[in-house]
Image 1 (cartoon, rainbow, N blue to C red):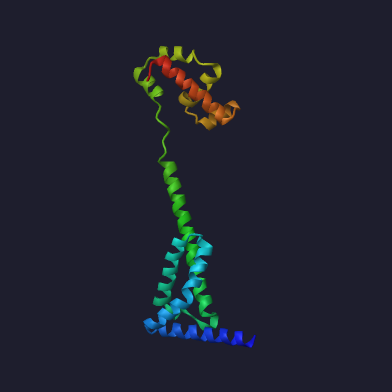
Image 2: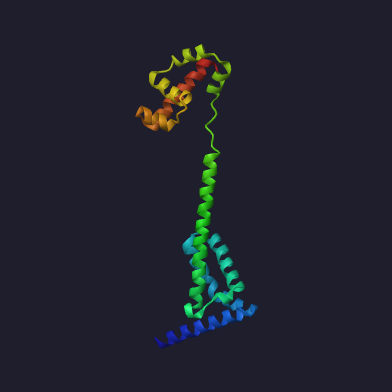
Length: 191
C-alpha cells in the first residue's frame, strides 16, 4: 500500500511541477501535462455530454484553458487532476445547457413561424362569395361532419379544441373534418 501512496504523491508532485512549468510558457511541459490528463478530461466530458464529438470539443477547450491560465491552479485547494476534472465537468455542463437553450430557441421559433395549413376549400369559398352554394354543400355533410367543419373553419378552432368541445377523440374529429372537406371539395367542384 505504501508503494501506491508514494506513486500517487509522486504523480501529484510531477503534475504540479508540470503546471508550474506551463505557467512559464514551457511547451514541452504542456505536452507532458496534456498526455497525462487529456484522457481523463475526455472521459469526464463523454460521461456528461454523451456525445464523443462534443466531448472532444470541450476537451480541447479545457486543455487550452490549462495552457492559457495555468496560474489559476492552487495546490492548497486540491490536486492537478481534480482542478482539471472540475474545469472539464463545468464546461461540459455549460455545453449541455447551451445545446438545450439552442433547442428551446429553435422550438419557439418553429412554433412562432407555424401557420395554419392552407386550405383551398375555404379560400375558394371566400373568393367566390357564393354563400348559397356553400350552405347547400354543407347540407350534404352528416351532422357530425358539418359541426366539426364549421367549428374548425368558420369558428377558428383548432382540431384539438374541436375535439374538446365535442367530447370526441382527436383522431375521430380529424377524420370527420377530413371527410367533410372532401365532400365539400366535390360538391363545390374544387379539384
